[in-house]
Length: 269
Image 1 (cartoon, rainbow, N blue to C red):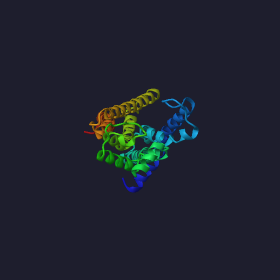
Image 2: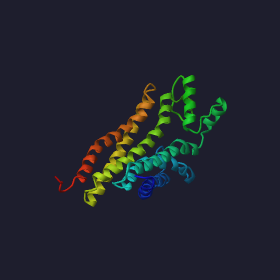
Image 3: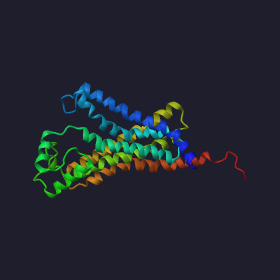
Protein backbone atom coordinates (compact mmCIF):
# COMPACT_ATOMS: atom_id res chain seq x y z
CA UNK A 1 0.00 0.00 0.00
CA UNK A 2 1.40 3.39 -1.07
CA UNK A 3 1.38 6.60 0.93
CA UNK A 4 -1.87 7.81 -0.65
CA UNK A 5 -3.57 4.50 0.12
CA UNK A 6 -2.40 4.59 3.72
CA UNK A 7 -3.66 8.16 4.16
CA UNK A 8 -7.00 7.22 2.63
CA UNK A 9 -7.37 4.33 5.07
CA UNK A 10 -6.41 6.56 8.02
CA UNK A 11 -9.00 9.11 6.92
CA UNK A 12 -11.62 6.35 6.90
CA UNK A 13 -10.86 4.55 10.17
CA UNK A 14 -9.16 7.12 12.42
CA UNK A 15 -11.95 9.73 12.82
CA UNK A 16 -14.65 7.29 13.93
CA UNK A 17 -12.23 5.35 16.14
CA UNK A 18 -10.93 8.55 17.77
CA UNK A 19 -14.43 9.93 18.32
CA UNK A 20 -15.73 6.74 19.93
CA UNK A 21 -12.63 6.45 22.12
CA UNK A 22 -13.04 10.07 23.25
CA UNK A 23 -16.74 9.63 23.96
CA UNK A 24 -16.19 6.56 26.14
CA UNK A 25 -13.39 8.31 28.02
CA UNK A 26 -15.14 11.65 28.58
CA UNK A 27 -18.64 10.43 29.46
CA UNK A 28 -17.56 8.25 32.46
CA UNK A 29 -15.23 11.04 33.61
CA UNK A 30 -18.04 13.58 33.71
CA UNK A 31 -20.28 10.93 35.25
CA UNK A 32 -17.72 10.56 38.05
CA UNK A 33 -17.64 14.35 38.43
CA UNK A 34 -21.40 14.63 38.92
CA UNK A 35 -21.45 11.56 41.18
CA UNK A 36 -18.82 13.09 43.47
CA UNK A 37 -20.66 16.40 43.56
CA UNK A 38 -23.89 14.63 44.46
CA UNK A 39 -22.62 12.04 46.97
CA UNK A 40 -19.24 13.31 48.19
CA UNK A 41 -15.85 11.62 48.37
CA UNK A 42 -15.22 7.98 49.40
CA UNK A 43 -13.54 9.14 52.64
CA UNK A 44 -16.36 11.49 53.55
CA UNK A 45 -16.85 15.19 53.06
CA UNK A 46 -17.64 16.91 49.79
CA UNK A 47 -15.90 18.74 46.97
CA UNK A 48 -16.73 22.11 45.54
CA UNK A 49 -17.31 22.26 41.79
CA UNK A 50 -13.79 23.69 41.29
CA UNK A 51 -12.19 20.93 43.42
CA UNK A 52 -14.09 18.22 41.56
CA UNK A 53 -13.17 19.71 38.18
CA UNK A 54 -9.48 19.36 39.06
CA UNK A 55 -10.01 15.59 39.07
CA UNK A 56 -11.22 15.52 35.45
CA UNK A 57 -7.79 15.19 33.77
CA UNK A 58 -6.98 12.17 35.92
CA UNK A 59 -10.36 10.56 35.34
CA UNK A 60 -10.19 11.09 31.57
CA UNK A 61 -6.64 9.71 31.54
CA UNK A 62 -7.77 6.70 33.57
CA UNK A 63 -10.79 5.89 31.39
CA UNK A 64 -9.00 6.53 28.09
CA UNK A 65 -7.05 3.21 27.96
CA UNK A 66 -10.25 1.25 28.59
CA UNK A 67 -12.16 3.34 26.03
CA UNK A 68 -9.52 2.43 23.43
CA UNK A 69 -11.20 -0.99 23.16
CA UNK A 70 -14.26 0.76 21.70
CA UNK A 71 -11.93 2.64 19.35
CA UNK A 72 -10.62 -0.68 18.05
CA UNK A 73 -14.16 -1.84 17.40
CA UNK A 74 -14.99 1.39 15.59
CA UNK A 75 -11.85 1.24 13.44
CA UNK A 76 -13.46 -1.58 11.50
CA UNK A 77 -12.89 -5.30 11.06
CA UNK A 78 -10.68 -4.81 7.98
CA UNK A 79 -8.50 -2.00 9.31
CA UNK A 80 -4.78 -2.55 8.91
CA UNK A 81 -2.30 -2.47 11.74
CA UNK A 82 -1.01 0.97 10.74
CA UNK A 83 -4.41 2.52 11.33
CA UNK A 84 -4.89 0.67 14.62
CA UNK A 85 -1.38 1.64 15.66
CA UNK A 86 -2.10 5.33 15.09
CA UNK A 87 -5.31 5.11 17.14
CA UNK A 88 -3.57 3.20 19.92
CA UNK A 89 -0.50 5.43 20.08
CA UNK A 90 -2.61 8.59 20.09
CA UNK A 91 -4.70 7.19 22.98
CA UNK A 92 -1.57 6.06 24.84
CA UNK A 93 0.27 9.37 24.50
CA UNK A 94 -2.75 11.39 25.64
CA UNK A 95 -3.43 9.02 28.56
CA UNK A 96 0.21 9.19 29.70
CA UNK A 97 0.35 13.00 29.53
CA UNK A 98 -2.90 13.33 31.48
CA UNK A 99 -1.98 10.76 34.15
CA UNK A 100 1.73 11.44 34.58
CA UNK A 101 1.86 15.23 34.17
CA UNK A 102 -1.44 17.10 33.89
CA UNK A 103 -3.40 15.46 36.71
CA UNK A 104 -0.61 15.73 39.35
CA UNK A 105 0.17 19.29 38.29
CA UNK A 106 -3.35 20.64 38.87
CA UNK A 107 -3.70 19.14 42.35
CA UNK A 108 -3.28 21.56 45.27
CA UNK A 109 -0.05 21.18 47.25
CA UNK A 110 -0.63 20.32 50.93
CA UNK A 111 0.87 22.94 53.31
CA UNK A 112 3.05 20.30 54.97
CA UNK A 113 4.56 19.37 51.61
CA UNK A 114 5.22 23.02 50.74
CA UNK A 115 6.96 23.48 54.09
CA UNK A 116 9.05 20.35 53.49
CA UNK A 117 10.10 21.66 50.08
CA UNK A 118 11.25 24.92 51.64
CA UNK A 119 13.13 23.04 54.38
CA UNK A 120 14.92 20.51 52.17
CA UNK A 121 15.22 22.45 48.90
CA UNK A 122 13.95 19.36 47.10
CA UNK A 123 11.21 19.59 44.48
CA UNK A 124 8.55 17.23 45.86
CA UNK A 125 5.29 18.42 44.29
CA UNK A 126 3.71 17.89 41.89
CA UNK A 127 4.07 14.11 41.75
CA UNK A 128 5.25 14.00 38.14
CA UNK A 129 7.85 11.37 37.10
CA UNK A 130 10.97 13.60 37.42
CA UNK A 131 9.97 14.66 40.95
CA UNK A 132 9.14 11.08 41.92
CA UNK A 133 12.58 9.98 40.72
CA UNK A 134 14.20 12.73 42.83
CA UNK A 135 12.12 11.75 45.88
CA UNK A 136 13.06 8.10 45.46
CA UNK A 137 16.75 9.00 45.30
CA UNK A 138 16.40 11.13 48.45
CA UNK A 139 14.66 8.31 50.35
CA UNK A 140 17.32 5.81 49.30
CA UNK A 141 20.09 8.18 50.32
CA UNK A 142 18.54 8.99 53.72
CA UNK A 143 15.98 6.29 54.55
CA UNK A 144 13.52 7.07 57.38
CA UNK A 145 13.29 4.96 60.51
CA UNK A 146 9.79 3.89 59.43
CA UNK A 147 8.07 4.14 56.06
CA UNK A 148 4.77 5.97 55.79
CA UNK A 149 2.13 6.51 53.11
CA UNK A 150 0.86 9.78 54.63
CA UNK A 151 0.44 12.57 52.07
CA UNK A 152 2.06 14.96 54.57
CA UNK A 153 5.26 12.86 54.74
CA UNK A 154 6.25 12.24 51.10
CA UNK A 155 9.92 11.63 51.91
CA UNK A 156 8.96 8.58 53.98
CA UNK A 157 7.34 6.65 51.13
CA UNK A 158 8.96 3.26 50.39
CA UNK A 159 11.21 3.43 47.30
CA UNK A 160 9.39 0.49 45.70
CA UNK A 161 6.09 2.38 45.95
CA UNK A 162 7.62 5.45 44.30
CA UNK A 163 8.91 3.13 41.55
CA UNK A 164 5.37 1.79 41.08
CA UNK A 165 4.01 5.34 40.79
CA UNK A 166 6.64 6.19 38.17
CA UNK A 167 5.78 3.16 36.00
CA UNK A 168 2.00 2.96 36.47
CA UNK A 169 1.04 5.70 33.94
CA UNK A 170 3.23 4.04 31.31
CA UNK A 171 1.55 0.69 31.94
CA UNK A 172 -1.91 2.20 31.48
CA UNK A 173 -0.70 3.88 28.27
CA UNK A 174 0.60 0.56 26.87
CA UNK A 175 -2.73 -1.03 27.78
CA UNK A 176 -4.44 1.55 25.54
CA UNK A 177 -2.43 0.31 22.54
CA UNK A 178 -3.20 -3.34 23.32
CA UNK A 179 -6.88 -2.53 23.91
CA UNK A 180 -7.24 -1.08 20.41
CA UNK A 181 -5.99 -4.32 18.84
CA UNK A 182 -8.17 -6.36 21.19
CA UNK A 183 -11.21 -4.36 20.14
CA UNK A 184 -10.45 -4.91 16.45
CA UNK A 185 -9.98 -8.67 16.91
CA UNK A 186 -13.15 -9.03 18.96
CA UNK A 187 -14.99 -7.04 16.30
CA UNK A 188 -13.80 -9.41 13.59
CA UNK A 189 -14.64 -12.57 15.54
CA UNK A 190 -18.14 -11.37 16.42
CA UNK A 191 -19.01 -9.93 13.01
CA UNK A 192 -21.02 -13.04 12.04
CA UNK A 193 -23.33 -12.88 15.06
CA UNK A 194 -26.83 -11.44 14.90
CA UNK A 195 -26.96 -7.74 15.93
CA UNK A 196 -28.23 -8.22 19.51
CA UNK A 197 -25.80 -11.06 20.24
CA UNK A 198 -22.94 -9.22 18.51
CA UNK A 199 -23.43 -6.08 20.57
CA UNK A 200 -23.88 -7.93 23.85
CA UNK A 201 -20.83 -10.14 23.22
CA UNK A 202 -18.63 -7.16 22.40
CA UNK A 203 -19.85 -5.29 25.49
CA UNK A 204 -19.26 -8.37 27.64
CA UNK A 205 -15.72 -9.04 26.40
CA UNK A 206 -14.76 -5.38 26.69
CA UNK A 207 -16.16 -5.14 30.21
CA UNK A 208 -14.53 -8.38 31.38
CA UNK A 209 -11.18 -7.33 29.90
CA UNK A 210 -11.34 -3.96 31.64
CA UNK A 211 -12.35 -5.49 34.98
CA UNK A 212 -9.63 -8.17 34.79
CA UNK A 213 -6.93 -5.60 34.01
CA UNK A 214 -8.17 -3.16 36.66
CA UNK A 215 -8.22 -5.92 39.29
CA UNK A 216 -4.70 -6.97 38.28
CA UNK A 217 -3.50 -3.38 38.72
CA UNK A 218 -5.11 -3.21 42.18
CA UNK A 219 -3.56 -6.53 43.19
CA UNK A 220 -0.15 -5.34 42.00
CA UNK A 221 -0.59 -2.09 43.90
CA UNK A 222 -1.51 -3.88 47.14
CA UNK A 223 1.38 -6.31 46.69
CA UNK A 224 3.90 -3.47 46.32
CA UNK A 225 2.52 -1.57 49.31
CA UNK A 226 2.56 -4.69 51.49
CA UNK A 227 6.35 -4.99 51.68
CA UNK A 228 9.14 -2.51 50.77
CA UNK A 229 11.16 -5.43 49.39
CA UNK A 230 8.57 -6.20 46.70
CA UNK A 231 9.51 -5.01 43.23
CA UNK A 232 7.66 -1.89 42.13
CA UNK A 233 8.49 -2.61 38.49
CA UNK A 234 7.08 -6.14 38.70
CA UNK A 235 3.94 -4.98 40.49
CA UNK A 236 3.35 -2.27 37.88
CA UNK A 237 3.98 -4.27 34.70
CA UNK A 238 2.59 -7.75 35.43
CA UNK A 239 -1.06 -6.64 34.85
CA UNK A 240 -0.23 -6.27 31.16
CA UNK A 241 -0.26 -10.07 31.02
CA UNK A 242 -4.07 -9.82 30.99
CA UNK A 243 -4.39 -8.19 27.53
CA UNK A 244 -1.31 -10.01 26.20
CA UNK A 245 -2.72 -13.42 27.10
CA UNK A 246 -6.08 -12.43 25.63
CA UNK A 247 -4.42 -11.30 22.38
CA UNK A 248 -2.45 -14.52 22.22
CA UNK A 249 -5.67 -16.50 22.68
CA UNK A 250 -7.66 -14.53 20.09
CA UNK A 251 -4.97 -14.24 17.40
CA UNK A 252 -5.14 -17.90 16.19
CA UNK A 253 -8.94 -17.72 15.98
CA UNK A 254 -8.73 -14.52 13.92
CA UNK A 255 -6.18 -16.07 11.55
CA UNK A 256 -8.33 -19.17 11.04
CA UNK A 257 -11.39 -17.02 10.38
CA UNK A 258 -9.52 -14.87 7.87
CA UNK A 259 -8.16 -17.96 6.10
CA UNK A 260 -11.66 -19.42 5.77
CA UNK A 261 -12.87 -16.17 4.24
CA UNK A 262 -10.14 -16.34 1.60
CA UNK A 263 -10.78 -19.96 0.56
CA UNK A 264 -12.66 -20.09 -2.80
CA UNK A 265 -16.12 -21.64 -2.65
CA UNK A 266 -15.29 -23.78 -5.73
CA UNK A 267 -11.54 -24.44 -5.80
CA UNK A 268 -10.02 -24.73 -9.24
CA UNK A 269 -8.13 -28.00 -9.74
